[in-house]
Length: 373
Image 1 (spheres, rainbow, N blue to C red):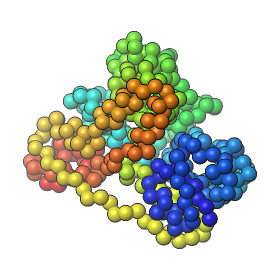
Image 2: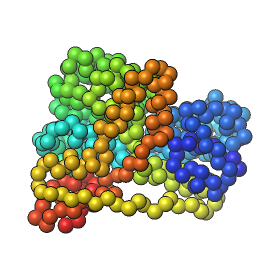
Image 3: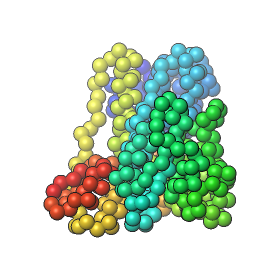
Image 4: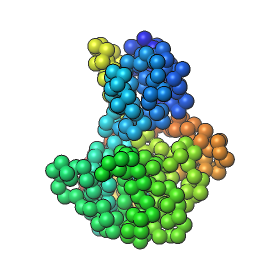
């Protein structure tokens, strides 16, 4: 059988090569002609899977190595009787660690007593909540669908905006219904935020009104913004890139661990669909890095976090991309993601600590590091 896959899916050829002939293509340029005679299609978020792409194709199975679904027309898949699988939770920890690195890069030493407002308490939101609490932060959460289904402890959006030092979005992009998230954060909501607060978006670009954010940041109404996702990707507004506190080219979930998790989930789903026994497993986890914590200084937390993943390198890369004219800017944005350096999650770092160290070890363990004494 023929399998068309986004070239950015790690080990796609190794894994799915056990099932058939794999053709790797840039995800943003996959066309109907590419999939016309294919049986399986494997994508990431940059490929719109819709009627135009699938028209008169032989596709029987679509897999998306993502946790978001706004790029997939699931109704159309059902009409065509095409099986579908995706990778919920695969890169959730990667996205949560991205936020931790961003907090450390802000340069504020004392997080205890600060408040983070989490909009969307799904898989990523829960992990962000856990890591924020490990840092001693107060957590507020808003999630109307979960609240209606019986969840407790949520606060209204306006209260979250007014009381949070950090407001971070972890919601799907939806445009209709009572919980529509298109431009959820906009000029009106920015005006309700605490002066000096920082907006973070790692969900989908259009959850934040980019034009309104640009105007708000220029007026210095907010303390800053950290954006990994943008409207008009892969060619975001260079003026917005210039004024955000930290900006990255849609790589929050791009840890090697997270991407491999996505491949495994899709491969197992495809094998199940085909009635085959999986014949591939990912390579053994890489050798862990060992670092030493010298003392109980609060400076040790940012040192160790940024040593494991330093968001500032990705920020510098995007700022260089922002200097390019369009369409080179979009080409460079995609090229950076395609060749993204290997990034391992915190669990691959062992922190060796003196036996006397107590609180620091608890903080680092709560963030996901392995602790040895």
